[in-house]
Image 1: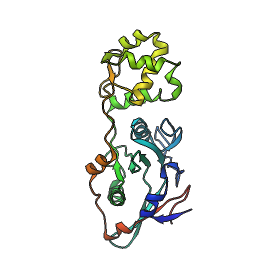
Image 2: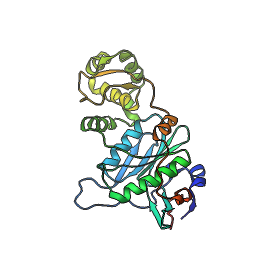
Image 3: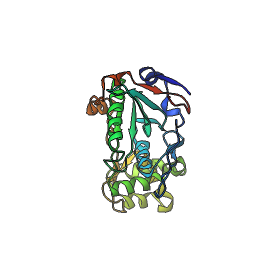
Image 4: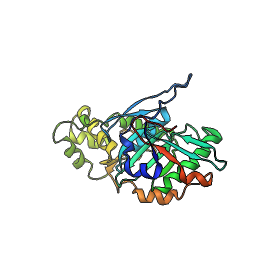
Length: 261
């Protein structure tokens, strides 16, 4: 169990490599519960607490700016305006290629968690802003986009690249915008080729609109510019809203399996 000042931990600790500081709760009656997500980015499993979080892990796994992820790797502690100690364990952490990070929660709906979650969100957002990170309550995808991301996620593993030379053939066939099956059939047997195309779509080497159902006439083409950089994310976020003057002096647990007391 390790406890550090947040400003020190944010610089020194590789949160993306840590185990959860506490287990995800099991809620009776819910269809989805805690589990593990195999991340193509990390090459290992990442703890997941719900279906909503699992979908957000998929989205981050496709983001070319994300280089690492972890579930519940840190507990933040602070004192509110009345001097009372508060704490919160964000559901996930993502590390970006420029070294900055994001702490996030994945609510199933906008009001999930109630007033306590809203106050914690403000405190964690402030703490993240102080060290150049961001905090998000990640919104759920619409049904079509979520279904498409889940489908492509089934082809994230490197084995779906196929035989040597197939990835190059996919790049050549879809060097210009082209319907999915037209390009696939130009390469060869769809049973062999489709997994390689879906793998390329998952990793962003080729792209198609995810806001409409993925079907045989979906237009596949060369991916455009990469996702926005982390500096843009921070500019969009702006400073988080504190909940008391002592928020800036909050501390964070930072240790494998550790949590603050």
